[in-house]
Length: 310
Image 1 (cartoon, rainbow, N blue to C red):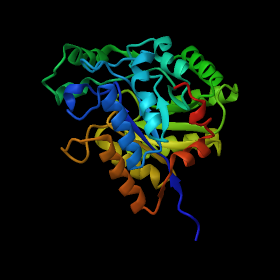
Image 2 (image 1 turned 60 degrees about the vertical axis):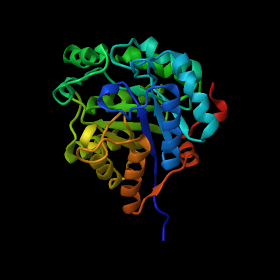
Image 3 (image 1 turned 45 degrees about the vertical axis):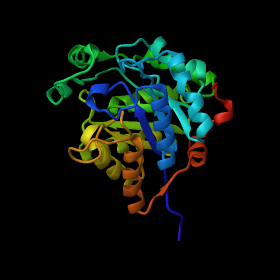
């Protein structure tokens, strides 16, 4: 019998989407983020996708020093692949967003593949009390916010990151973003194998219906053929449904508290590791095997942890 297909599980540990008031389990301090990343790796994540936060109020922090406070600890305690954000928060400039990846030279960095409306304000209907003034203002401000990722922005990140040997998790929130990536592939600024993370369920991007998943995969197949590694993330309550749908079609998966605070209907996930264990159960129940960090490095042609800047 052939060996089971190996699935890369990425865990997005803490991001700019959710504010600390929404869940007491969201990692905020450097120690909490490092611990959560290591625990996710122990649960089966081959890659951890990391943002940083101000430890006092949980505000997104894109200063390289904020990342230095935990990335070395993660590397010392785990062989997991560290993936740093260049998305940061929609309110930041591309130069600000690029600094951690530029200075720390990770194996992988995220890269958003197009400008878009990025509507987080519906969360205000579900959450009424906030600990910090910035949280409500931040969510409300997304009614009139365009997350800017122009062709010049993308080229800026691509050229500087590639010089460091960093490869990219190309975050594609809609069909046009796949075409944008094809443009950079044609110009040889993006090189195979492309790690394509298709994102479902963010207001302003494509939805989370199974037809949306199939459409994004068909488009990526047509544009990239065998030159890409496909992964998916579903925002909020669609997280596990999207993961299962895509895994059945040959995809890899991303989970974590950046993408969803939940571990079942009405139940807050107590940790990122909880979500990794849940999706691992789904994947293994489908007869699939969980990829190790070494597997991920081979599949994505990464430079290895010895070549990072931390």
